[in-house]
Amino acid sequence: MKTKLTFLLSLTFLFLFSGSVYGEEEVKKNEKKLKVTNSCAGCTLLGVDLAVADLTKADLTGANLSGAKLEKANLTGANLRNAKLEKANLRNAKLMGVYLSGADLSGADLTEANLGLAILEDEANLSAADLSGANLKEAKLEKAFLCGVSLKGADLSGANLTKANLCRVDLTKTKLTGAKLRKVDTYKINLTGIDLSGIDLSGANLKEANLTQTNLSGANLTGADLSGAILNWTNLSEANLTGADLSRAFLYEPNLSKANLTGAKMKNIANLDSAIQCKTIMPWGEENSGC
Image 1 (spheres, rainbow, N blue to C red):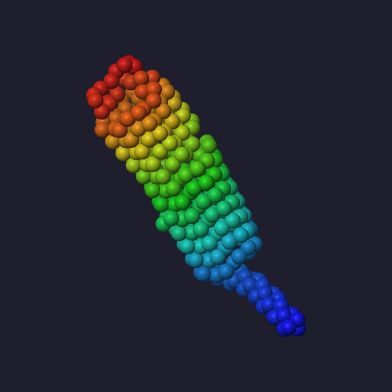
Image 2 (spheres, one colour):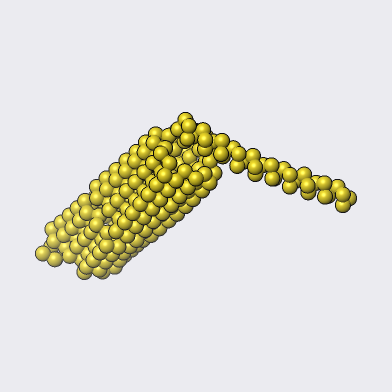
């Protein structure tokens, strides 16, 4: 019995060892193929070191690059649709115009990466990724999953975030000028002090969001859910809040001058009387108590 058990353990060890070696050999072979042909769709490249590599317009569709080292790599215009890049190191990588639709970038390090015009649609997964200081100008992030992402100091000017999930996102000093945030899910997000003037947040889920001192002047909040939101000293002058839900919202001296709240839900609002109201269109008519 003992001899049989020893034999089985030996076979198991041999199988695992040979499998590990085979895996390493496969990765090395695929790495060489990529460097020679600039194409390795569907390849296994787990943990591969491609730091500073020139992979401009490379075809890596569906490739597995989990844990790969791609720091400062040039992936401009590369095709990474449905690729796996979990916990990959992409610090300072060039990803301009890269195709990342449906890709898994969860936990990836994209600190100061250049993702200008990048395509991250079709529920690309960026959960818990670090995009601090990243350039995402005019990037397409429609329906992207950004829950728990750090966008501290990132530039999202002109980016399309329609229907994106932004729960628990760090937007400290993030630039969002001209960004599209229609129907985004930002449940309990902290937008304290951020300039969102003129931004489109129509239909957005801002339930219980912290909007203290946030600049939303001229913003489109048509049909947005602001129930339970904190709107202390928030600038909502000339904002369109038509049909918005402000039920149970906390208001302390917000600026509602020239704001349009036609059809807005306003049950159980706290401190509404402290709001600056001048030419403000309320559901019951115009208010001018703060003129």
